[in-house]
Length: 165
Ligand SMILES: [Zn+2]
Image 1 (tube, rainbow, N blue to C red):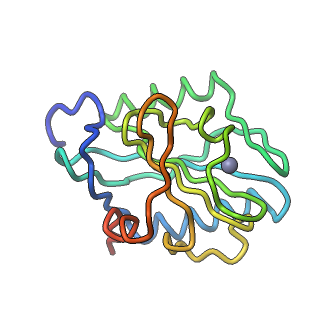
Image 2 (cartoon, rainbow, N blue to C red):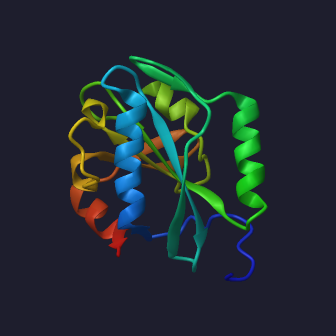
Image 3 (cartoon, rainbow, N blue to C red):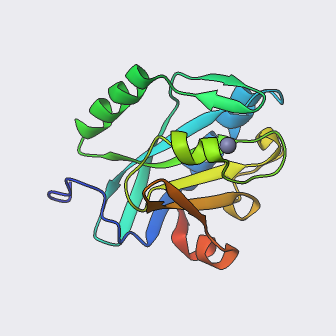
């Protein structure tokens, strides 16, 4: 393992995401949402360098959800962080579904699970019903600090993620 990133560097500019993890993300969100409720999953991963991170695992947290919200209880959040840290990794990205359009709501700003500077939050529209994992069909938001999340333009999304075999 790359030595000693104790925190996620805010300079990350590229995330390697295995194609199988993207597929599993789409399938899991679809199964959890069942076209009726929001669902959330997380991408665990490690930091390769100041600018590159690699998603390694799909994490499905214990969650309560309704048509317009999801909630991951605090004790589950703490368990997750502990488990991931024990492996020298981080929760890098949150991915959740919306019933219709993809955007970051005020609740999403407030309740996002990864909260480090530069954390990513991806919103998948239409309960991921027909989503094949193409990130260009989602909205991608980056934590700019102090609970402010900025939506990334399409061009930035395309260079931010590298889908790996
Ligand atoms: Zn949301």
